[in-house]
Image 1 (cartoon, rainbow, N blue to C red):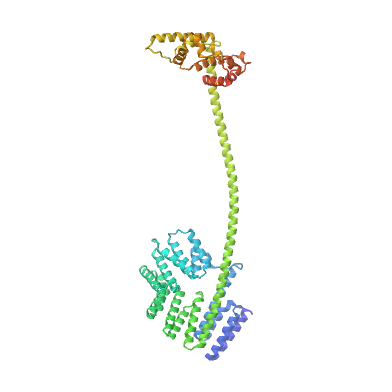
Image 2: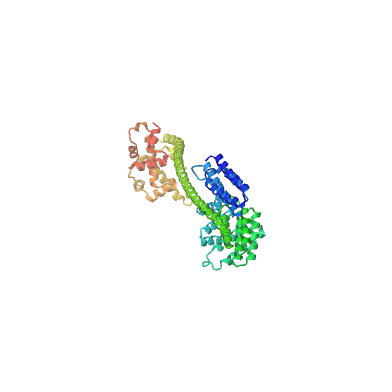
Length: 563
């Protein structure tokens, strides 16, 4: 059916009853009401206009107003769903998803969608500073989430642990007292036999803090809870007073849904006082505060309470009508819960899917970054290695050149020494130089010194003439026998005058001889080992060691440098 035809038909139906009385008005309203229900899916865009025309063209009773309110809630729900579908046909859109994590979690708890809200709060608390006010606020809502799913013991543990914290600010402390009162309000009497006393205690603690600090939101909620306490004690006057305070405070903060709930509680007190007409009046006042976006749960309770009061006073037809509206709202609420659960599961699935995709993407990026880092690391180490190798080679070259220069100086110095020595022996000037060595005779024994000087001259003459050092097996005993003296004197003489032991003394002669042989071009055909043997060494290693010790260079380098 087209929208124009639908509108024309509906307006025609509405104009006929104007000519008749109230009785026909009522019959016609019911007909229109049922048509609106049937046609709701056919022309949603014009439903608001139809409802407004119905309100204007009929003298509506209270039950008819309630039925129209039910229609309004249905239209509002349909329009919300339609807008969501228009925004994204493949996903369920929830405005709360655009909120920060903590606000989104709190919204889910308020909506009683704890399957989503509790994990979100836990996620927030994992990263939040545990001593911060926001973390304490989130903890109270986490406890509230457990209360809504009936895990009262767990909520109690969380709240009591939070109240023990010294850094808990007064706002969050009042909030915690309030939720603890709500917990005991719902607790099983067998598990908490003194639960009403606890409701009284924690509600008053919350009220005291809230009145001192001006926390109207906590004050109103605590007054509502305390009203329930007095109602359970049959102190109805005090209960009505507290519900009235709560209603006024809720309205002051524009918390209409909570204000309607306070009216509902007031009506329940009137029911217990058997003031059913007063209860009906209060419930109708609450209904007039209705807004389509408040939700249908609270109005389901209101219509059930109206049905109960009308039934009690014998108005069974009205009781049936209100009960019928309440049952329809319960069905709608059930469907809404199903949609919410579908959304929660869909959101959870999408979140997990997105998380897996993000995880896979992060892993791929990490692998790429790791490969890049590995390549950069290899390149970096290669550059470092090249630079280090270059520096090392330059350093080695510099050290080599410095060493070669030093060795060349030593070669030159040794050649100078060779040129100052006689062939295979020492010149007299060198002997004179040795005589001017660091030896300082002992002045306290002139006779012994004279003998030592004579023995020294004999030893040097013997070494020059006989060249005993050319024999590899020469010993100090052999020389002492040749000089007809004691080996002790020879040893002491060498030690006192030359500051050497016998072996060093002999090896020095051998090295001087070897140096002369190596410097002689005519001896180049003789190997290094041969030169060592000719000089009196019977070991190649001993020859090399001694030569380097006395000259600073190796015999092979000395020979190669002077070729």
